[in-house]
Length: 143
Length: 323
Image (cartoon, rainbow over all chains, first blue to last red; front, top):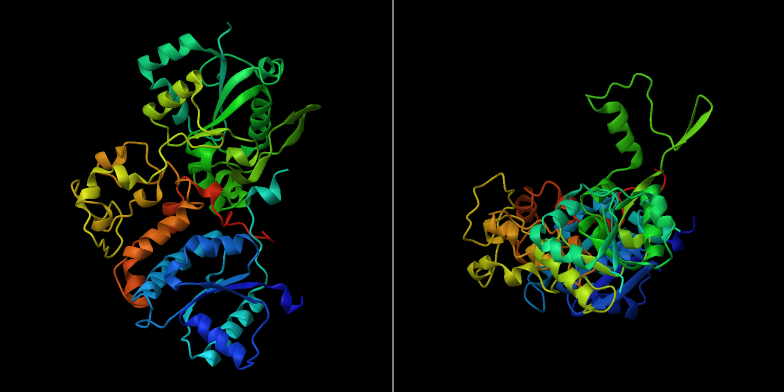
């Protein structure tokens, strides 16, 4: 299966990770094309429902990228994101979803190289796990 | 003028919703005066063919409780829809899947294995399993299909109104029936209960400090809960923040945390996701290790967060392709 068929949604915070991704672009660093960025003001703004909805709408992997702990523009938004992620990671396997399909990580504004590394790693992980097919809701089963 | 006709039907449910109607006690008398009950398999002797012979749309309101698990339930739901002007999803199961929908965390195969083979009290030397069709002495016998997934009612038919609760409380049933009889219904698709979270009317809300911070998550069996203190601050998972108001905080009055039977509010799509969001804001701990320890007491996250809303979960069922 060609690798471009998998889709990874990455929620990136405006102040660090988006800037890091932007810098990666400015430096012409290569990173996988299947990473789709969604810019949010803070990783703490990412409701777990956004992550679930991404999976529901066809994402094979979802990332939340925020500022390093201690660097949050809003003091502790990234810590809130971490708390939610831990609960979400515990819940995903009960729905038959490999928790590796979800990843929370930190990328600072100047870390273009790190942005590239993190998203490349995620892309490789998803390539190894394969595509995700959610089931058990009406669109696909009841006429 | 002829009295409006109403019907009750049950799909995959426990019978508690039928009990809730009986629990209206003397309040049911003016209702019975005002309407004709034309179908109620639990309590009265009518046959499916009685309904089949009625004109389309001739039943004013059908109250359907229970989730949709078998082909028979889907067929009956569609029949009731065809014959009724309004369909009300009565209770958590019809609205969001309810307790039966927790079966979506496993699969039909595993359910059959447990029920017909593995359970210690099962004696089944021939390994018989129910089949949709079997021929006995030249006669064909049929059973409904048992679906892979438990659906909520609006997955199979259009639902006009929702009455939440496990079961819906007397107050919201009476209010709904009065609203129907007086023609004072909100726009279609509405949940007939206040659109705010349970915390807003909880008497323990005042005991909540400005900054709620919960330590290790506990279960109700782990501690003796203080009835005068917000359950979340005691480390117990209370679904109040992610649950619709309208029940009068009955469980909390009984010193039990909310389990979320009224489902989410209109602004929220996924009750479990919202509860994670809410808990995430208040869990104690600043690093992965301490947070992992703090959440160790949460033994069944999906069963806790989606106890009544599994059919409405964004992530679908646990069954994935290939199973």
